[in-house]
Image 1 (cartoon, rainbow, N blue to C red):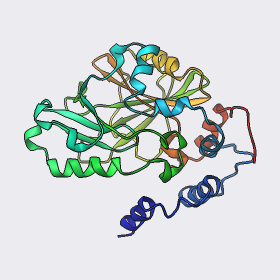
Image 2 (image 1 turned 45 degrees about the vertical axis):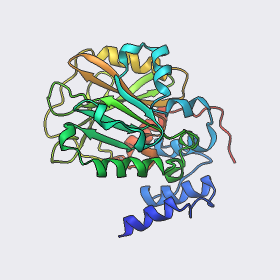
Image 3 (image 1 turned 30 degrees about the horizontal axis):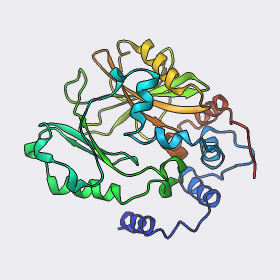
Length: 295
């Protein structure tokens, strides 16, 4: 019930009158359990809030658009790293010709985070539920939830990507590289997303040494193997992250074939605690704020 009330408040825009800086201070306090220092930010999560407020590179709006970013990635590293589209873009869910889509596919809204419908078998798809989820995303401006400004002016639309799994045969592990000033410092791998257990996150340094970090989800109980062409993944992440003080580059690896996932400029919106907290400050040391402007 509380969750539904919160969603209604956000959707009706009742919090939009609160200035970004004030909103972020309240949000940070509620989620992190400590005050947000915007004058002298030192932790990684504090610096992400600072970047939301003061680092306004208009290119970011293109890069968080899941459709428009494809052309940018094509120019940077090549079209072969893009997950093939099987349909779209469409402006509304009624435009989707479901009968023409392949047996399996992935629907994504292009302007937010979480607007995803994974269809493994079209004959088993709950079409009404899929349409409801996509419509909810289309009607929501993701910017207002965490004040991640790049999302504010992205035009909502829908694309369909090819459904893909890795060597496991049932999931697609997500490799998320933290790039600071064009250099990968760390990454985490998301596993078990399609299982009945909790999604697992395991952190590594750029030499693939496991790091003792918990951030949002538990570590996997099994050993995560170093993927084929790991060094190429680092090289690609650094190419895509060149020219930015910080960005997280998400990639996939299917039997040594590498695919681009997405650009993320605010990892978990900077409101998910690191355990132990020392790693929040270690990541913070790697992040140099561009042209600091204090208000």
